[in-house]
Length: 361
Image 1 (cartoon, rainbow, N blue to C red):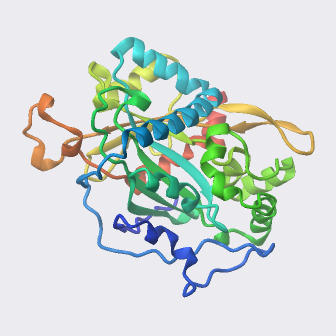
Image 2: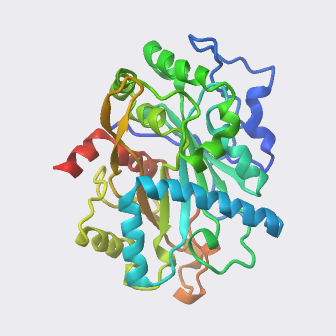
Image 3: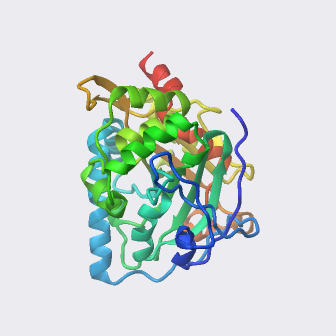
């Protein structure tokens, strides 16, 4: 696989940087259908440090409760389509107790005519999330932004009621695809009208904002971009949730032991680049299951199996300056923050045909 590269960018808290597509100074190419692609006018800065950035203040209590209820509805759709995740979460709860916290939630989007990162980002920004770094994946024709959560003052629970997860939103660079693939994507985006304004609602309901596709269009996109095909049939549904293993309290807080625990219980993990994906500094270690599949009836009446979602696991180790702290003294802000292109590039493969075929073997 071609090596992905990181276009490191640190974004200030201003939401305006996420809305550069609205600037008249930036020209954007047109889809064959007349729809506009996303613009590329994002500010670039020096390479980011993996150290955590101070979190913003939490939203008022009422807003916080509402926000968590939205995440809960997203999770409900996710678990209904991903029985593997539900089973693993249950096993971990039985083994380790009520200590499960989420490292991040991830979404996939089409980077065209406002249906990309911005369609979801505005919601998270409104509830105190701040954009951090940009990551690029040239071979996959993707870019992504991750967002840090506000403080979770007063919340000592777990899951959705615990520390708020980071948010990772990626988008397909549609204008880098072949003309036929662009035409397919733009054809469905056109049927959505202003559905991008209701991306969060679509994620909580599990519904597409565009017409249900026909099977031949799904197949055509799959041949060029499995990411595009996944997004066409899953829309804004939560792509994956990630368990923070170091927040657990038993021996499986070590991700290597966690992986063995998962495999010993009969689940297959994504083997792309090895089961354990490790950042160059060794401080961010990740793994994931292979996506579940389910039957989907296309608009032309054909019913076929499609990839759904998966569950990821992450261990963030203490930064070098905090390596001498005792385990009980180490807090989340002492640990490695952010994401790593090399890790994420391989995690994306959890929904690939190669991994799904291996799972069914």
